[in-house]
Amino acid sequence: MLDILRFGLSAALTLAGLFVLLSGIVGIYRFQYSLSRIHAGALFDTAGIVLMLLGVICATGLNVTSAKILVVIAFLWLTSPVSGHLIGRMEITINDDLDKSMAVIDRETVEHEKDAEVPTDDKEAN
Image 1 (cartoon, rainbow, N blue to C red):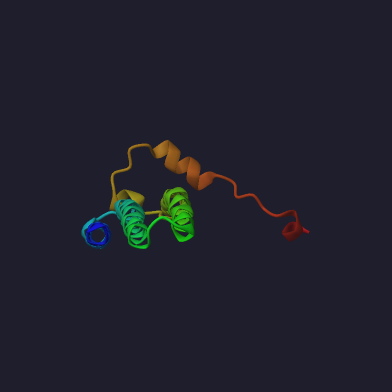
Image 2: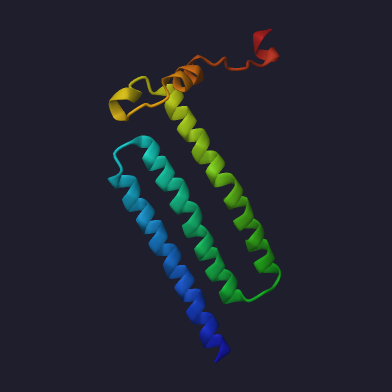
């Protein structure tokens, strides 16, 4: 009976993760602005993978593999928002037609990002 319950919970978590990932894919194609697409991709990617990995933990039970999967979940939980932020910041820095694709509220910050000096390596300068 406990195995059936564990299988059901594992299947439910895995299917929920699959639904979240598919929703993220739809969101990426439906959103008009690139920064909205980045947000949808980063948010749904993290949530979907976490749900699917929790489903794997339920399927395998509590053991060393579960601990390793929890470390992977923590790593994804920390790195996915950082990568999404960096990609969004790159979009603001590189895109010269930002006003055409979205409403820019804080123009000073955008200009500051575009005018910021990029640190150079001393070895390349010599």
